Length: 181
Image (cartoon, rainbow, N blue to C red; front, side, top):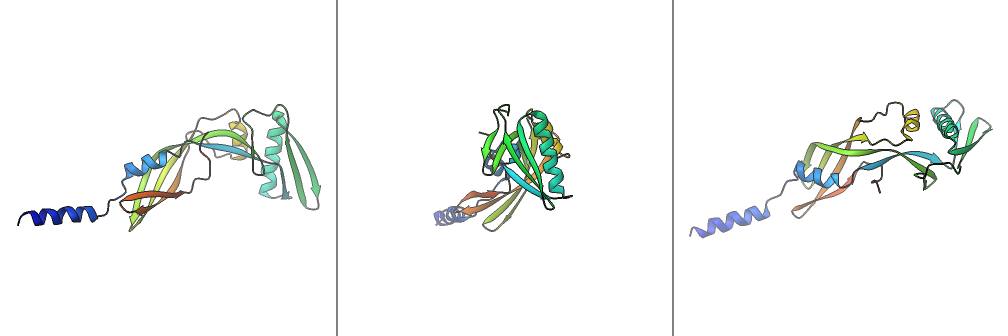
């Protein structure tokens, strides 16, 4: 008679829901880091006169031409400024082609820790922290485009999990950068 309650208890434990732990989420998310923080150099771009986009493109033009890494053609068409960027032979070897131009590595972002874990039924949301680290020689140019960027600065990111059976599967994060090759 005593065997029935033990079997019942074991079956209830087998059917119970396993919770996603902060440690498990950290281990899972950490695999996608470090990521490369890059300077996006478009092949071509246009911006309206007086716009914040024009100011950013002008800073990019100044930094890239001053370094000798790119030749930049800038012309006015109506109320727009049109830029064409072309790498020179002195461009850094780290420069790599991107979908609509080039990417120049400026630093890395590394995983720090999970800050918060919220579960709701078969889904979970993890808030985690990353830190800007490992600057390259091109980081100074990155800072002219992003004046608030500092090595050691942290930012929050989010990850979404879905439960499949007894396992939690990472579905997506809001990280837009790519893992360091």
